[in-house]
Image 1 (cartoon, rainbow, N blue to C red):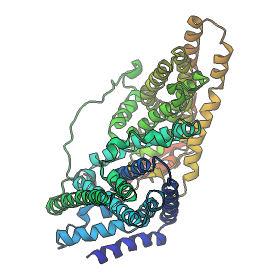
Image 2: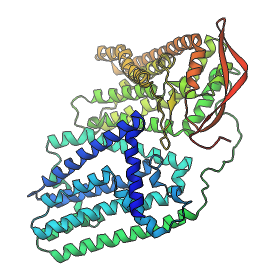
Image 3: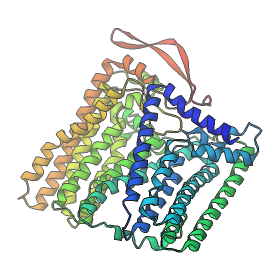
Length: 571
């Protein structure tokens, strides 16, 4: 059984080289990164030789890798079908040989091998003597085995949840704290190491409790063998092996339960009826098209995991770019606060652009209700209302909080002026790019975020980069006004700048929606055909045939039902 499953796993990996160009590129890049990771880890652990805190740093590295093995399989659950026990539920396989085969298959591949090679660096950096080298090799193998068994137990136990839409949404939201940790370390750690604020001795206190975790047991077993305490080293490895046995037993119980439990993740859920969350008369107009569009878009901001991820990443980036201001180590605290407001506003537009194509095949229903340029402008304005309802509080609250923490609360009012102007400019540019650089989107199985369809990567880059850099250019007048009014009294300066920034931002947003409406109305049939290529949900949708007759959009009475095979037919 183990040999067959390992062969199947290797065949899946090799088939990537015969698949599409994107899959082939992903396989090659992943393999190269695994190779670099292996040698970098081996060299890093080997460089700890004769370092007084070598065992502490090794325990930290081992624990970090174990955390990665715990989290990353949850994110890749929908992408790697080998993690789902339901793929083998129909085969007459006994649990024990199946576990052996799955465990062996989990060890096959570039990344498990890279972990093992990298962690063998302790044979050089931590082991002293022949017995210690043997203990180090055993400890590295047990460490990898612990990571794999932990990952298998967690993914199998949560398989039913992760297979459901809500479970995939929760797994997708785990990207936000991971991204936040990565950005924080990328901003803080290199500078702290360069200023000698973080040294090997900084991790000495962590090891006081880290040594009792399984990764710490593996590291300290090598240390004990190197100092002549062979019995204690063997005892630590025996305890680590016992923990692995317990994890494997728990995994076996979860696997047995998963193989005989009916899958309820695809059952239809109850649909509750209710009114739209926004009043129809938004902005004081009865039956307002802007309010109707805004009400619909608002619902998807809390239902769509992509929107929650985008807003979460925007918040993380706004905080991370001001880390130095928060720590009080910035010589110019106003720059960090202003940059936080500007980047948050720019990301609001960049991440929520391409609204026409992302609407997908149902866009033909919107086309029926958009008879002219004013209607198209109202359609874009409805999206802007929702994005501004979330983005404006972000660019007001976060920079002000950063300014207060850094000890210069007055800088928060300057950030308000810049942020209000920037968010209007970014929304206007995103509307313009939605009409000029639209791109159909597709979703990979298990991935919550859309990506451009094949051949549309350039439009995606032009839209997002154009919004980011264009926003930076549009807010130059506000930056000049902030610098030029430095000598004006604050009670006059702040209200004038905030009012001017808000008015300037509103003008930019209105101009962007107006220009986008004119451009979109002129090429509405082409935009509809492009939107019909977007595949974000599985199921079947009716698509109307579009024609352009005398400057008007005409729909034939016949419709074509288009089905997307990425899942069961939508109910």
